[in-house]
Length: 495
Image 1 (tube, one colour):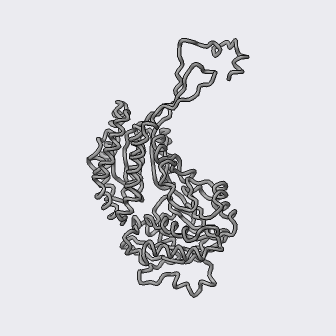
Image 2 (cartoon, helix red, strand yellow; image 1 turned 180 degrees about the horizontal axis):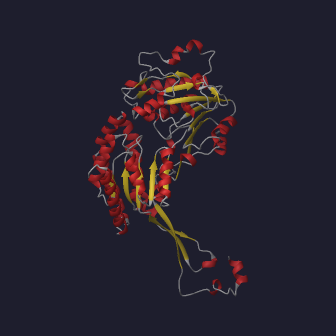
Image 3 (spheres, helix red, strand yellow; image 1 turned 90 degrees about the horizontal axis):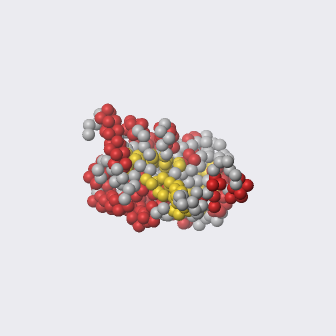
């Protein structure tokens, strides 16, 4: 396939037409076919597992262990779940028929939506491309896949794997930058599944609106992590440290910022630093399991959040050590209602970066204004701004005034209060990240953090149309529904 703009556009259009013909032939409808294709996908992943893991290391410095746990194992588990339950999910649902339509029978049948487009991001480039594909295959759809260009090695391996496993009239894959995205979005699909930023999500939704195409938008946002004074601080610090260190914070459901009760903030921050050192050693740059920032541009954006523009090399003492002499007189958090300038923020811990390696150490920023740039957009990196609070009402008021986050994390004993007074895509009480692991629960955002859900049965339903069917026998034909409604007084009692 040629790489010119016109040839790529022609290839997309031609391949989509092939997929439309293939879908309308009914080839994807039989459950045995769907199961066979899921097994082929699992087999291909096993065959390419090393190549995928190596590509993740080259592009993101992601260790095999983390690649397996956060990417490969999740897709393997999703495939097993669909193979185990697909037949039950696909069964027609019998529904009661009201007296007004008796003796008709009612049911809901599940039909595949048809030709689907799946656009994946770079942060979990294997999982977030193939997990939606499992739902497309399971429900009987065709799919065209678009991996991220920001992880070129992963994209190359995925392309090789998909093309070696499936015919393009069934599952196709195209590589390229945003101009290719625009070509794909110009076509008419039966469903678009997009994972990425809210800004790009709006562009996808705008393009889809021209054809009234349904969309699933898995976006992101600033997911708060609330540490109450009733929390088990040691456990909380361990879990939060892991959640922020995972993929170097480049996770759509990573805890984005900390809201700590002022009575426990000093103790918690010390524990958090201790846990980071336990997970990643005193020098995370040398740690095998600490991911790098995806691109130079992304690193520069993260560096811009730091209160100093001068790079800190590995020989520089920790900023927390430099500030120790002032620690007793300096705040280690900014009250939620505080309004300091961006320059007043300080580095409590971390702040080291290395442009050559695209490395940024786990970093805590204190004395942060709620209006600072680091508090305005999803950080998507290993930086933790800290706010403090006195009353839990301050927390809920702060959260509900902002865009609804993809995730919300609370540590303490007032979880029910938080759930009652906030809205988020998902929530963990006394934990982080782990709600994504349960295949029996929907995963997705709300408002600015996305729309639509998937995982497990939700994926099957997302790629399906639930079609209502009423079957009415002809051996009897009740006269009451026909004009001139002679039995109207009886009809009123029935409806």
